[in-house]
Image (tube, rainbow, N blue to C red):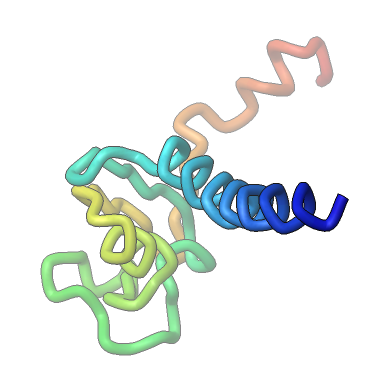
Length: 102
């Protein structure tokens, strides 16, 4: 019984340590995949300097917002259109009209 445990334990340990790593790799996006970030002040990182020079000044899009940090960590191609104070509802009231609410 001791010999069986001495043989099986290292194998189980190896499987336990490598399985989570393999699962993480399968769920990772491909390097260079496109990531589009949309949102208002919370997503843009308003109030967290420095701001992206390519963004409109009124957007206060931080170079350290969540999208920037995630894209850098995962090696993604980022399209960051976040903008502080922005309202992304293209048709105000459309949801209410579609649901029958007045």
